[in-house]
Amino acid sequence: MRVVIIGIGGIGGYYAARLQRTGNEVIAVARGRQLEALQHNGLRVEHPEFHFAEAMTAVDMPGLHAHDPAAVDAVLLATKSASTPEIARGLREWFDGRGHRTAVLSLQNGVDNEPLLAEALGDDLVIGGLSIRVGTHVTAPGVVEATGPGQVTAGVWPDRASAPAGIATERLPHILSGLEVAGVPVQETDDIRRELWRKLVINNGVNPISAVTGWDSWHLTHDERIAPLLKRLMRETASVARADGVTLNERDVEEMFAIIHDLDPIKTSMLVDREHGRPLELDAICGAVLERARRLGEDTPATEMVSALLERGIWAGAPQPDPAGA
Image (tube, rainbow, N blue to C red):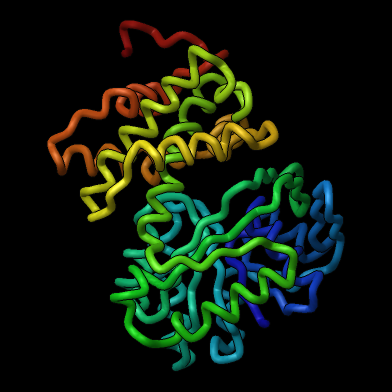
């Protein structure tokens, strides 16, 4: 395959390395110091079962326009959700300027990326996806550390029954086959919207508490006093999924809790962002839950609390805020 990967952070870098190692042509789209490192030093990925250190074609978004989307099998998005509107506009300009289009697979956090992409690019191009059972960190520009198998679950948007026939439905089996050959466990789903909400159950349950406490996933899920709060956050997420026509129940909550409970200790992406002073994905994770709760007239007090703490910069080790300025 010829694949464009936009966002060569931990997740994007891991899949870029896996795909290139098995003979796929990867075009990495990055910016800033990450782009400079990729262009000068290539990409390095360290995984307990996989070592990669190779040169890689790397461009910024304007540089991507020099390539023809007709020769690209798929675009994989692995950026923070806040950048989705900007990326969608850039992809539309690329497609319109070249007169060709290709499939777009989102591997981003949250449940709102696919609707944005479909509105900008067309329903027939969009594949929803999620990455689970993986922990990744950029330890230096161009250097990624990863653990776990990094399973990808994907499906045409919004679901198999109502997705229009077109590029996404044609390309999805080819994309999943390429990932599987590259050593990535894959699963195709007929209802990707439901799977994205199940992933949000994990993210809203673990990410914000991890960022507040500074604890990794193992310590959070194995602490007898903290674990019930995680499950409360997960239940709030499952409850408001019905605003999007998705029904989740206690069995989904327990299954998602078991996934993160049984993993080796990992730092969540929100904790890593907090430690590096980067913006947190509060809108994509907590915000998605709170917005649906308001729409339904439902209370989600645990999500409200952790979101408010993080919005105000209140976490373990942070200076106590001045009451006069609160």
